[in-house]
Image (cartoon, rainbow, N blue to C red; front, side, top):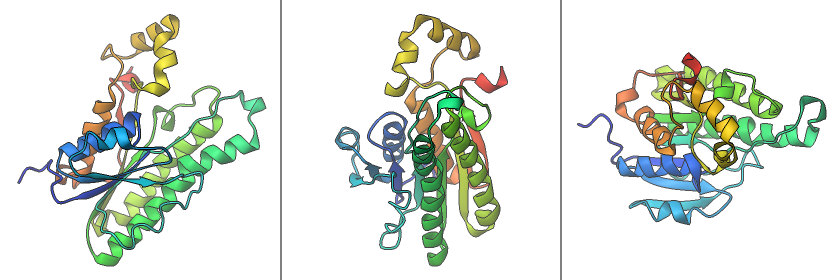
Length: 242
């Protein structure tokens, strides 16, 4: 058997309409999985590149949005990618922005994992969870206090759940993307000074592609990663090693 094949598996990818989420959904589909593309906006562009996919509208402004969907359908792989960001100086950051970011980026991740885990455990099966963390799971960042707190939280949740579920056939891991060329980073890439400063810090000498994250998600979702639990895998071109 190909240890990287996802044939016969069903995966739920949140935030699958664009960017990293879209790349993950496509990569999982190419590896043979049936992919449920969940987002608050249309995933039609993603679905056009999938042979076996369907759409689910979910808005994680309600952190419990996905918790009921694991009861009636066998889902083998959960990718928690949906997220938002709000930027302001720490002295100006509002409670509303704090709550919005924490709800989507951390609270929704935990309770979606919880619902998935309950379903897998109740059927006595096996499952794979891949949470999307960040370099700001390791670093402090600037002007993104809630995002930084949430991504540190995602790393902690990943390790906690791995401790509880590793012996129960559920793998829980996370990917910490580096600087990836997506719509979210177009302003940075178009700024000659910032772009140059970032590239000089990346040993690989280039921005990452969303597909770099997608293929890593395939690995962590596959049998090849069966003995990997609680890892926060930085896919950053060597940024953190610098």
